[in-house]
Image 1 (cartoon, helix red, strand yellow):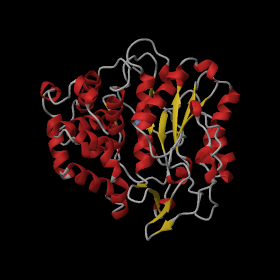
Image 2: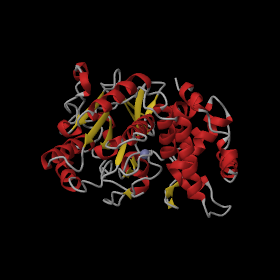
Image 3: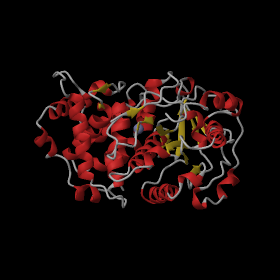
Image 4: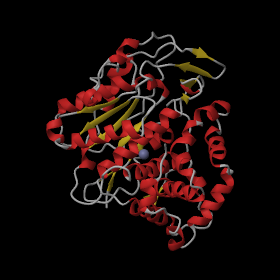
Length: 412
Ligand SMILES: [Zn+2]
């Protein structure tokens, strides 16, 4: 099977890689195994142009009605509000949308997207109820092959208005309005546009398939989880405030470090868990098995030094597979097998304490959050999991939860 990559914009790869997800051609009727795009023009805002001197946003706007997930982009021009407080490391914000973060769907040329628009809306309805997010999610949905030039330009313009400050929108449009046909799905949020919510880019290619598992739904679930992950990386539950590290704002892009195997493996794990609860005609056990086999293929021919540890900031493709995805998902499945409570920890609790740990120690906040959440050192986890991945396939299958266990497990 052939994997199509986007190959534009080469900067910031290590930072953005987990936000961008693969796109496979439609000949593959299975859930996409692997893959990350090497990069994409999405989320590559090189700007942290918004700053604390900008004016407050209009709190009255939250009273708008979002029936049908149509938000009309009314808030894309909002400036970042003044911080409500500042300390040595962070500026803290309260946003007008916090009481009810909206899910917005920008569907371009719905006439060619057909009934699939309703499918995406059904997912958003499900997500709003079952995996409510702490920030708005702006879904951009387009047929990147068949959409008109006008629709593509509108898509680019809307996206640039969301992720860039007003002085950079034009340059963003110029640099972003190409590569159509080879774009990858992607999602997340950076500190620079946190006040407008996350973006989630999906392309109709994945939704057009015949038979087999619905690849489009896999991507939609996977990408939605990226918005959940990245939003929480800025959120301080105690005061219900978002905080952006002052140091981080100088970096590009402004997003705390999260290992790729947690970012992508976590999104793959969560996508199975989420899909298990929707009426999607998938078998979660079989999906997990697919992850195992992807991980095993990536390890074929490797020597005993092969380790999950090597996939914190690398996402090499090995034997046609990206271990950060399959191996990362298996790392989550392995943690769940160690302790029933780890299911909820993997999906919610790790991210709940992330911002607090990052504030204490930006270099290793992700690691501190891991060790506190799961009660084991990262080094011993790597060592145990690496040994597990060298066991025979039957022993590995034995730790995968049954479909019924996937369906009944709860992150609430
Ligand atoms: Zn991803």
